[in-house]
Length: 113
Length: 112
Image 1 (cartoon, rainbow over the protein chains, first blue to last red):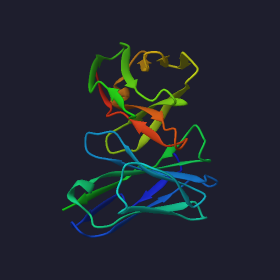
Image 2: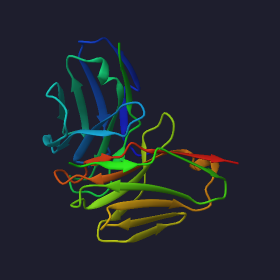
Image 3: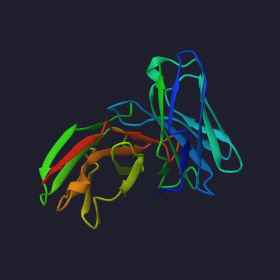
Image 4: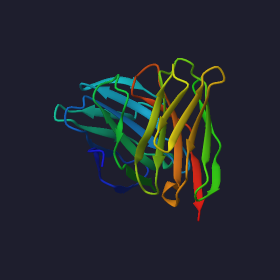
């Protein structure tokens, strides 16, 4: 158990729709990162939030956006869903943006049909 | 650009040692990591090594780092069936300390 929880565990959406995925970090962890893991691939970094501000972004289009809240929860929003967005979405929390260790949640499996 | 490469599959017998190899490209990475992922689960941090170290041992796990060749390896001694999983090598990104670049993963299969 890492103390990081994600919801929902599974989700099916239709192409063109919007989706919100949620992550609850460990208490006191000011940094959350989001990753997309396509089937058979390694996780790819989407972005990171530190104290409610975006603190780094990977090679993902602007329709991927996030929010981080003061209560150690965060959201990943994806607009205009495409079939290729089908993946496992993982969040990872850490104490701050320079911490060595990040703790991953179990992920949300998103299927776009 | 930044990239992490791993061999895709490794098959060993129970009790043998397993060695999983990885190459990375970003010489400015501060830390290098090994994560384990079991079916349907998230990522579990196994171990990590600071970039100025050559070796780190943690119980059955030994990490070797050759910074000149940008080569990282994970040795699992006395491999057990419970070690069957996907193992990911990752390097820290320069732009955000805890953001990671992962390889595609090595599937370790342990037979009894």
